[in-house]
Image (cartoon, rainbow, N blue to C red; front, side):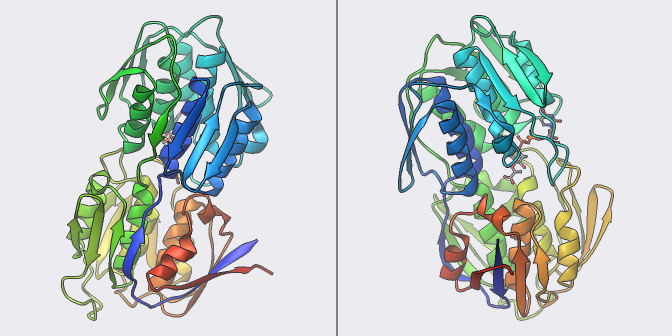
Amino acid sequence: MEKLIIEGGRPLHGEVRISGAKNAALPLMAATLLAPGRHKLHNVPDLRDTRTFIRLLEHIGVKSERSGDLLILDSTELVDAEAPYSLVKTMRASVLVLGPLVARLGKARVSLPGGCAIGARPINFHIMGLERLGVTCRLEGGYVDAEIDGPLQGNVIYFDIPSVTGTENMLMAAVLAEGTTVIKNAAREPEIGNLIDMLRSMGARIEGRGSDKLIIHGVKKLNPADCAIIPDRIETGTYLIAIAATGGSGTVTHCNPSHLPSLLEKLRTAGLRVTEAANSISIDWPNHPKNSSVLRSVDIKTMPYPGYPTDLQAQFMALMALSSDLCVITETIFENRFMHVAELQRMGATIRIDGHSAVVSGRGMNGLCGAPVMATDLRASSSLVIAGLAASGRTEISRIYHLERGYENLVEKLSGLGAKVWKEQEE
Ligand code: EPU
């Protein structure tokens, strides 16, 4: 296993290029199961999770070719309709094959994912939604066995809570259903817009893109896709926060500023200057942050899009640990997404957890010091990287395979911004 070493306390400066979004690439890769043929996906990030997803698709019978960020998936012949536990347990997003497999083959067998570091994360909405479309779902031996004789039947699906992968699975199931499906209280994340664009380009008929009510008129067949993955808004936000936390300045390129409405406002409220262009965002300090009390404390509450994203909560907490006052960070999406708190405390942060909120008493821009810490999940790990970059001295982050699930070329990108960071084998 490898660990990440950071010699912190160096302001980041320069430009960093954003990769394609992990959470858009995964559903778009799943959508290739819907239509036989060669699909072309551009701007696909090379990550542990996208590689795991390719292995899953290959298990199902899809052939893959990769050349740079172009991924060609040939789903002409499917040989198995199963997502086995060995793959699902390492990546919950494997559940995304459920909808397209039942839609195309009339059956799917997908392992239940079990718990994960950030919460219970059930898939009951996915199952309920398929049942509404006429699919019979049985739970047996840790697997969901989904089956239907003939095409799925359009219906109304209502989500109690907007679910991102739930909405994506229902979209992929409903596009080949007989009749019209309406998804109410659908999630509105930009990754869903990306999936809708791909499905439309394949011949699907979907109304309501960007809203919480999606109307899908089923079609009999779809064509192979040629589609690009949108930029990763969470990677974008992570680099913006990292630059801010180190007192640096820089430009994040190849991103989409309109996908980060809440974060950009929070950064401005905290005292940063944030300038948006068509495909880039620049960030700097209006006054050089020599003075350790320049960063204002700002409360955040995670919400479904366009609210503040849960996937940027941990990173913002690392920033707020360096602020000048007190703030409250409330997590409303996942019940156990404060695993980074104890690790940030090891670096000198003053944070108290009170139910679903964390009360952060900022210690000023020079308030953190390096320490050995442990990565627990993907986004918790990136908050430790940010803390390590801002802290004085050396930080060692172990279990960095979590980071490799979602950040392409992290060490190279941070080094390009002037960070002193490298990987070492753990003893
Ligand atoms: N929920 C249920 N039942 C379900 C599905 C969801 O109760 O059947 C609940 C969840 O427990 C949670 C809420 O609904 O409280 C919303 O969860 P959602 O289904 O939206 O999460 P997800 O689709 O499993 C995706 C991302 C996550 C991101 C969340 C929230 C992908 C592959 N994953 O997960 O990304 O945190 O949406 O925005 O798109 C990450 O990238 O680090 C990550 C965890």
